[in-house]
Image (tube, rainbow, N blue to C red; front, side):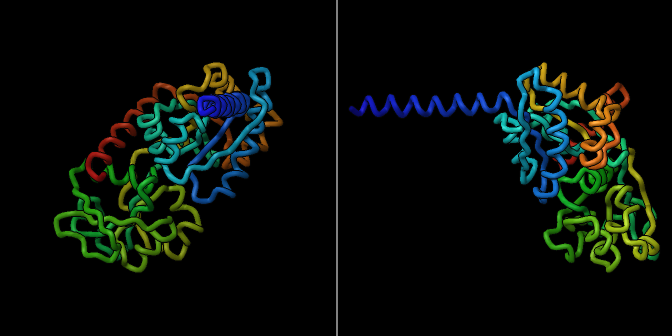
Length: 303
């Protein structure tokens, strides 16, 4: 009797596993890392539906959106096959490539921008005019997953052999021989910290520097930019390694041609105001190689 029960249990477990796999085969799953799942669901779902509408001959009939709470969570989802397609910033994309074997598919012109860069800024009366003058000063990054407000500026300092020291409390006094850094949590916080003197210098993207919600004009007028990094891609589309080749090829074709399609224009706009997608060519590959080196440099020194 016990053997019969065990056999029935094994049968139903196998059936459930088989059913989940069958379901997954007709569903394309897009994902991103988000602290605002509701907002990003409405951003991603129309684009996923548009893509699926052009994959029915491949057996793809449905789309699904999955949000990851952080990069480590997304790496788990890619490894397990729960997410097929991801849209992310460059350093997160490289993390997924290296730690989950994800494949970089295309560059995305998010809000019409193909490349952007990081700016270091400080108060006009700070007396700071160069990165080398940050020793013994405090620096505000946004968070440890940000491309433009952590990886890019941190790697710039490390490459110049300017030592960084993590401060758990932003109001700590940094060591006299190092640059003390802490995380503000948002662009507007970074600007505010520099304004009121919690941090001597802030770093985030040139796009945030120009946005009123990130950098109010009354603050910007009192700041100056002391350094700009080299440009890097605005956003990247990735796919999990085990996604069938036919689906990868079709996804790439659909995305590259979406801006020519009348039915694609609205999903593109909703998809973070994307104007179009671009292939990864020799020039952008060189830039991505630099990002890979930067990613490893920051991880070796700061993590």
